[in-house]
Image 1 (spheres, rainbow, N blue to C red):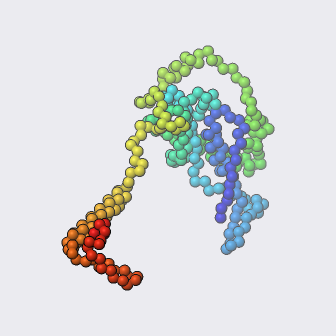
Image 2: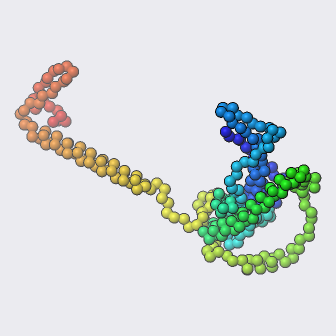
Image 3: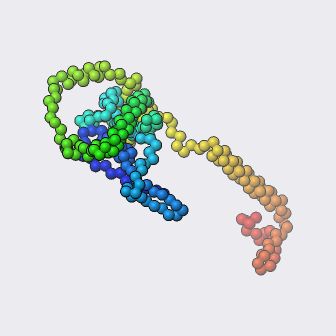
Length: 288
């Protein structure tokens, strides 16, 4: 009835934004995977080998894809898909996982940056566009792989191993001109459209945590309407019981006051069936 599938990821080369790469690799592996076909007749379960029946794919209804955003200058500027060098100098990171139906699966925020609502909405809109593009690339790659396998050729990882495209920890060197980096950065910052509200300093209530937005008054510990009604009824019952108890005590006190001083009091012991008559002057003060 249940197939247990374990997905292990081994990092071959890391140049930044490993979360997005891992999410794409994981969902593609699950879409590419084929399990043995099974038939059930009564209580007899038959698992067929690949020679008997073709393996069948998993039932995957949607593909959650992660998109990472790096923030700089306390959230004033954002960057999609940061590299390893950009991650070293960023103030914070926001990861949004979404499918092509624009359904958010998870959101994770880290770093020392505090984001406002406009920034998160802007990132979610960018994520919707990026996820649609990545999903189309994944589906096209799966179709090409299936087509190449039917033709008997190699595709994907098997084709990249001989050419050392993936397994090599090196890349071709290229000259980089850094003479006008500051000027280019200044032009980019000048053209960028900052958000309407920017916080100069982040507010960290506890080390390792951050706050999104201004926040509202905490309602932790407040009672719901039904609980308030029950509490009010219990309080009313308690007050009524206390009133009845006080009334009984008052009546007992009045009865004792009405008892004549010279009238003897009869005390009965049910176990020994003995009756003792005490005179008023012989009674202790507390008993009176």
